[in-house]
Structures are given as C-alpha cells and as structure tokens.
Image 1 (spheres, rainbow, N blue to C red):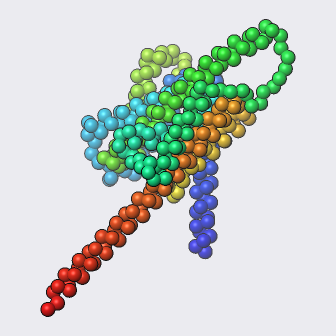
Image 2: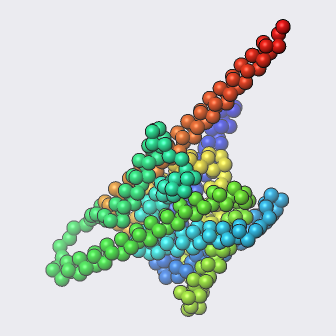
Image 3: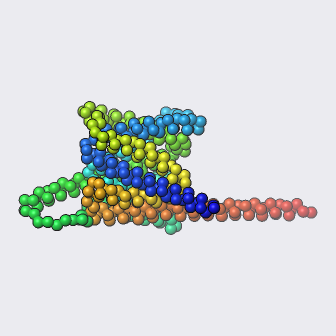
Length: 365
C-alpha cells in the first residue's frame, strides 16, 4: 500500500513537471506569435507584469502576513536591483533575441543558465569548486560545454536540416544570397541578445539567494520584483512607446498572448515550479529543462514552420550535456558533503565517548 502511494506521488510529480515544461514551451511560441502580430516589445511585458502582480500580490499579502520581516530602504534597493536583472533586462533581452531568432534556440540557450549561474557564484565565492574531486571536475567540464554550445549557436548557423533543392534564376540566387546574409546577421544579433537574457537571468538568481536569506518571504520578494520591474518598463515606455494606439488591444489574438504570458507563464508556472521543487527538489526539476527545448522545437516547426539548422542542434546538444554534467556535479557534491559531515559527527561522538570513559576510569579509586 505504501509503495502504491509513493508511486502515485511520483506519477503526479512527473505529470506536473511535464505540464510545467509544456507551459514554458507554450510561452516561447506565444511570445513569438505576439511579436509576429505586431505587439510592442515594451507593451507586452508591461501587461504581463501587471497581470502577474495582480495574481501574486494578494497571495503574498495574506499568506506571508505574519512571517514577513520589516522593510528597510536597503532591502527596497535590493528589490529594485532584482527587478532590473530578473524582469527588465531578463524579459527585455529575451524579447529582442526572440524577435531576431526563434523559440527553439531561445529555449536551447536557456539551458546554459545553470552553468552561467555556477560561474558567477564561483567568482563571488558563493560556490565552492574543488577540481581534485570528480564533482568539482564535472561542474567545470559542464560549464565549459554549456558555454561552448552557446558559442556554437551564436557563431555557427550551419546548413538547414530540411533543405529543399530547386532550380533558380541567377537573379533569384543573388536575391536569396542577400536575404540569407541579412538573416544570418539578424540571427547573430538574436543569439547575442539571448545570451544577455541568460546572463541577466543567472545574475538575478545569484543576487536573489542572499536577499532571500535576509528576507525569506519569497512571494513578497517576487511581488516587489514584479512591481519594480513594471515601474522600470513604464519609464522605458515613456521614451520608447509614445504612440497610444500601440497600447490598445485590438484583437482576440493579442488578448490571448497577453493573458497567457501573465496568467500561465507568470502565475501557473510559478505555482507549479514551487510545488515541483518542494516535492522533487531543485536538481530533479532542473533535469527536465531540456524537455522544454524538445517540446519547443516540435511546436515551433508545427505552428510557426521555422527551420532547424545544424549549428543550433550541435550547440543545443553541447548545452544539454553541460547542463547534466553541472547538475550531476552539484548532486554528487551534496552527497560527498553529507557523508563528510556524517563522518565528522560520528568521529566527534566517538572522541567524546572516549574522553568521557577516560574521566570515569580516572574517578575509580
């Protein structure tokens, strides 16, 4: 009976993880559709963060009312910086990269975030690296593989995997070469922006860790991050998006993309991810990240008809291998540290028993 209960819980977790990655995948496609139909790259995140704030704010207020520490000016500055990295730079670079690239490679590039986070944390002394042990070596090798994969995607597009051959006139060939050159330039810029997205996301996670130690009310931190991110995007829009017509929702398609981004990508995804991390742990959840890339590639091809290129596939494979290497290294490191702590505790206990025994023996006349 107990085995059936464990199996049922495991199945629920697997289904939740699949749903989580499917929601993430849908966001990549929906965001690309939003850009294709002409929604402003500033208006879109403004509406998304308004919806997210309306969803998260009440939960943060009521659920964390008793455990919320007092706010200070220093904390508000840190929340502002979290918003700058995790909302404004993160979402802004993502939309710019998606505008020039494709959902598939946006998802593939995101697999490099754990490796980039590891590099930043190690540079700041928040992550320990011992290359003499296999866990430390795995993290370093995985990081190098992930960065190499992102570099391949950025610098090498490669031939299309589903190339169709047909005869063309010299004029058509010249036009196609010019168009291909322009696409390659746009592709490179898209990858550069997506790298900026990954770096800002990683920096947000690194900064978030010490902030949550001082202010452990996670929902409140997220709500403040959304609030300051919304303010920052509104300031940007005052200079970039001055045409009032661009703020009007003019079709059901536009409304759907905005609601999906706010409700599903920010509301449901946050809740699902929190539940999955509580049930399976952060490492187990992160292992499923590459599934998102596969789902996006399928949806991208079926819905948007985007082409797959050899360079992107090679880079994505390197990033995924690097991701698994880093995650394995982290998991192995935790196991080694736990074993060392257990051994240290046992040794300390034996020494105390020995000292106690020696004292008792000395008391005997």
